[in-house]
Length: 408
Image (cartoon, rainbow, N blue to C red; front, side, top):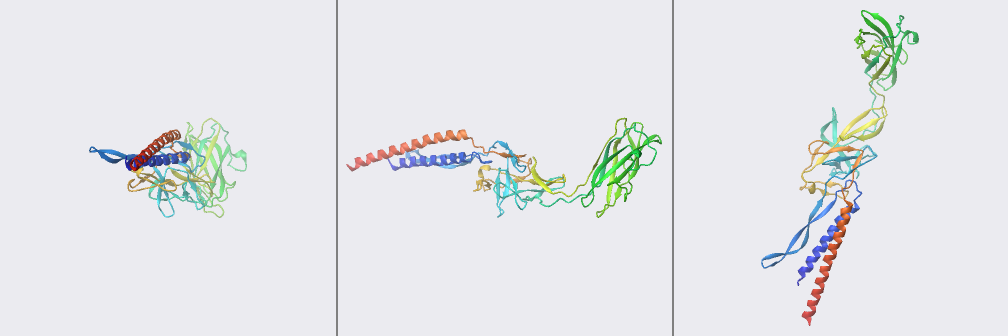
């Protein structure tokens, strides 16, 4: 018996130790978000040749294999937590502009307004152009911290029905005299500074004229007609109750104090006159100054900011990276991966583009470690370690006996 047998048992013990490290790491990270289970792959070493045939010389670690199959998705209470359903990795960038890749989608907004990943690195994405299309340049996602500028109202859309059985009123409309109109409708509009104003319509059934039914209207701003132009008009309805005239009158103009002139395009084309109770509605565009209230990421990876004035502004779209060989990725100390020559250059796109998976908002990917199988592996490795240790002990005993024989 030679020392080779001792070396063979030694390789077996070393192999078991490496496998134990992998299993221990898996169990330690069973609750780590998006952790990928790992295992050791082994290969046989060649030993002595007997009668021209090689004898096994032990075992060696062939390499580390990671299981990149998707872990289960769990719901999260954070609107900036996201998970990838399918293939791909989020793209992160550290202070030295080194890129890292991870499926851990726990994201927050830092003190300077940058969207950062679970490890504090910047999350990369695409700027949005036009109708939320990914731009050509990928970079950090910066969340606006200032107020959203106001937007002056420009259009007011009016819909609903005016009761054809309403009493006809012959005298001119006086907003201060309820006997001069049949109904009224108010809507909030905004000037260039974001000040809110109340636009109120007063409708009056003027009776038949020219073969149609006529309804007069007058508008006030904040209860007054002062400074208003084109604030009166007439709607004409045919005998089927459909609007046939006055649907798009000249724009109403006003001069709010300190603000730019207000010009409102009025749209009455959605009005009808049927024998049913009056029910009208008015909707205006424009908005007041908005303060940022929250950040959210939707299922397309679109990052949006919501404001106190009810507006939501889309600012970026998350980048998703895919690789030719995930096994070629190298794990870094913070739990993210770096590309290598073996992994190939990443293909970066938006979610649902090319090989990239989809985004699940308000969720995180769990570790894909199967705790039960890892515990079974521990039992098997324990038996393997005991067998190799027993072989080593037996070889030592035999060598000791040989030494005693040769020395007597």
